Image (cartoon, rainbow, N blue to C red; front, side, top):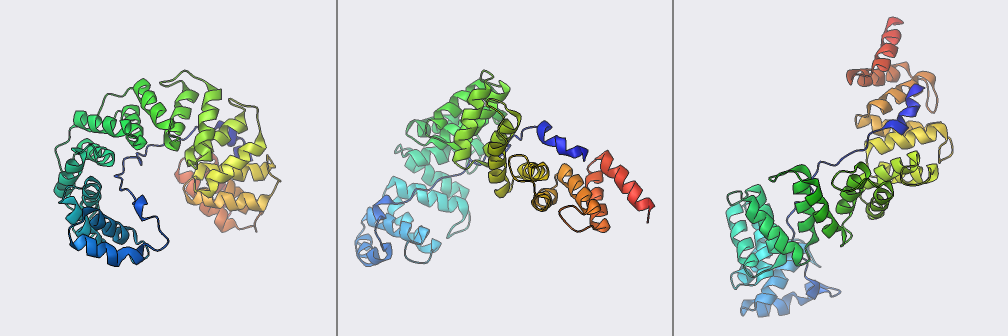
Length: 353
């Protein structure tokens, strides 16, 4: 089965997502009690007398469902009461609800208004959220320079996702001129707070010498940091490094460990790779049945190599019952993606019909 060797030649996956670009809403650490709902009567009494903090706390209880059912309409009501009294964290949360359409119809103009009010009070989460609105042109005309200014301010006050977003902007050239060295600087700032996505990008850049000096040992270090914090692409790339002995000694057991972690999280390439390792007994006991199980998961996500290997398994009845129809199905899927070997097998099988 010639495709077995593809494990060692796979290109590393690069995330194109910018999941860090997500508005943030704080939790209320002041409500760290066993049953926050028991506080509702006393909080309501204070809130109705105009106590902004009590109004904010009621909003938090209803917005997060702390001891009660989530009620976005009530949360919005109390956040607005507190926000209109100038409480910055309530303004930030109210803006978030307008932005997401929670308890009300989505209203980006109102979201911008309240983020701006809180940001003008130097509330860091609002500065971060306002920066994203300027970056994406939501509720306001797109303005990258202003977006950067707010993101820097937020990052400097401890919102490390702001640094991460700046890194992503420069890494991909999103609204700014692509500059991998500048991206590395921002990722480094975010990584100081152990942000796993920033650590992943630093690993990627160290591995390829892109914005950072090529250093496989450093790449392995950053991938490890990110992988241990659950970042799936880092798990996958770390598995590749152990499998190929890049930046470390070859270690199939460690490779299998990280491929399994990434595979369990749904990464199709990792599912294919751990299937191959069960196929050959590399780092795990040889187990054709488990190989098939992982090939199925990967093939269903579109991995052409998994589709090919799975077709072979059905054709030969290894790890599963022989099933010519299933073999034809998966050879067809692989052939449709341009796999010439799959096409050749398919032609032979269809001739015999």
